[in-house]
Amino acid sequence: MMKCKYCNKDYVRNENRYLELFPESLRKNVEYIPACDCLEKEKEREMEELERKRVHECIKNKVKKYEEISVIDNKFLESRFENADMSSKYMQLGKKYAENFLKKDKQIGLLFYGGVGTGKTFTTACIANYLMERGKTVLVINLGLYLNKVGRDWGEAEKRFLEQVEKCDLIIIDDFGTEKDLDENQSCWRAEKIYNLIDARYRSNKPLILSTNLIFDRDEKICELTKRFSVHGQNRIRDRITDMCFPVKVAGKSKRGMTQEAFIEFIS
Image (tube, rainbow, N blue to C red; front, top):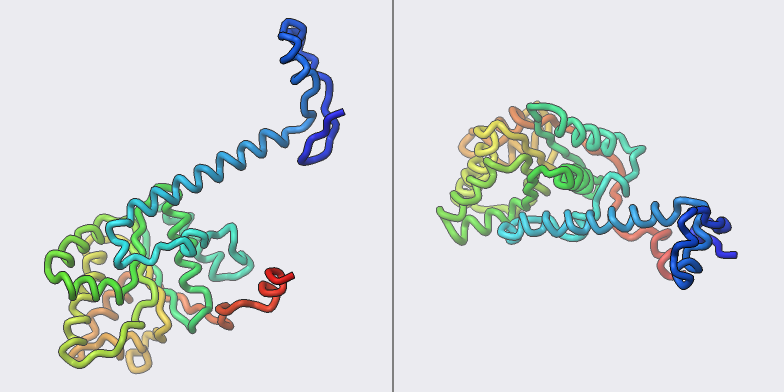
């Protein structure tokens, strides 16, 4: 007697009344059939996996022209709420944000700030993948790569990119504020380009998500965003961010580095 290879249940006799009309060679193959729906479920899983791969390829193709400044790589695409520790209040907030992003007519931005390795990038990646899989256009950029691109190609590169920035459903800037220190003239140029980028989102009335290791505080005296991007006493960048983004402090121990459990699982 044949058994299901998934649940080990016995096959049952096929009671189809037209079975006797089948050729004998075919009749033998369908005389007994599964009593479960394991095969259907397995086919569904295979189709879901194929669809997921197709979506990933579409995402890659959409951002291909921005690959010089994008941080959407394979590791990023594997970051999803299904693989996350949803007991974390930050992940719960991220999931709720992504769900409401699809439901509400007007979206707001987020500013995730906190120490290195606390899960800020992972959370934003989960939000991005959730939305992209549901048809939203999300552009995730590294600010340092963006500034290098604009500095190298000058006006036209910035103009083309800002046009795209205004069209996307969501822009995510990862590791905001980790760019290398510059002299005064370079700092002014950098601040102008960053302001233009953020202001393009502001004027298009569309949301922006930032992740940063810098300390954020309403008190400008201790706010590292103010210190980092202030030019001649003006804090236009910080002002734009506070207008657009709700600050979320991500606290906890760093999750970076290979854990002992992961190594033991690999080596055993």
